Length: 466
Image 1: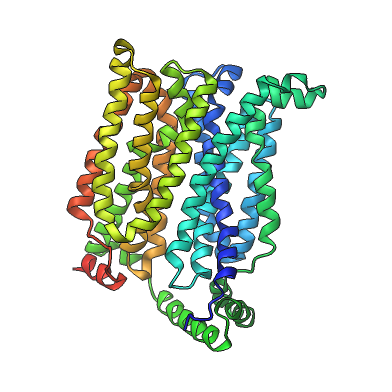
Image 2 (image 1 turned 120 degrees about the vertical axis):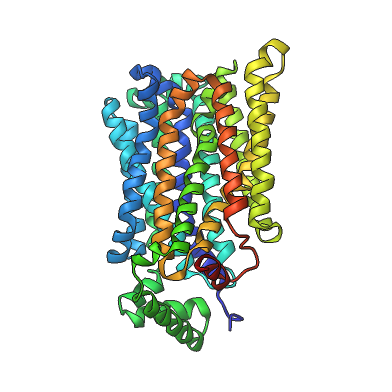
């Protein structure tokens, strides 16, 4: 049935949608290279610094809440266009902001865009994919997010170097201001380039055929499905199958979430989604340069170290995509989280004894890279796979939205609290706390989460119902 599938066309559509993930990653990680400069310019204390980082996450929470409503009413494609516009406005607004409040407002607008693409980009990829390739194609989104992280680190590093080795000779006052005296503006503003590219290229992709079928626009949906599947017969078959699924979904309601087994699954999903944010990964992604500088590194060296962290994150995510179905979800969590605990304790040890023992900063980088490796190959790769498999088909979207909302709440809290933790618990205490938070996560997965590798969704659903 899938012999004539147009995989090149599907791949193109998936890559375009995954560009939203790149913007997500860039807009999230670019903040790491600007914290010290913005804090100095606007005289921010620890809580204000946390607000500078966390304000975009408030926007993300709002974006997650609005994404489903927008896409259901106006379509996936138009909602992605809205996200591209929001990213563009945010980038320009950050570069030209006149004071701290304007900067925060611009970051909130970008955060709304992050929240929207975090839901709609993978949703669009899923709806245009064929079953045979859906897993790896949806994984492109996760990969794009990590590439966005790396892109932000590279841009931050390059612009900081340019600001001290060439930008001081710029004659135009505005360019001198943006690229030299307040280089953080160019770091945040560079997001406008991929945002505009995303906006333009979206016009070259069709609307999701599933959404078109929901809106009874069968002729247009059929044309897109024919392009995807390569034949009228297969397109008609897929449309009929979609109509059957839609028919069953319309009979469902949120009360299914209150069934004892399903309620337990939802609570477990919320727990692992939120706990995962308190195990340190976003603290490293957001505040990595600040943490490296606290170890005695210069600003240039700290950003270079962050580039290496981003590169390892990308390469490990690629590895995870290939092994997650072979090793299994739970084993990856066991191995990965155990490695995270050891790495976090070694990082804490460095901050306690590294100076007294004369240990090189390179060893700190190695500990961070080990932590990122174990994190990217386990919880970062597993969380959305587990959440997409845990819930019955009739409430999968609603249950995942609840877990996703919890994840963003946890992300906001860790972004807001990390400066306070670093100041009051010091780096060593902060990383010990992250290590402690790994323990309940691994216990929940061990005792309460079933191994879903190799099982059908129906088998998993029966597990929770019984």
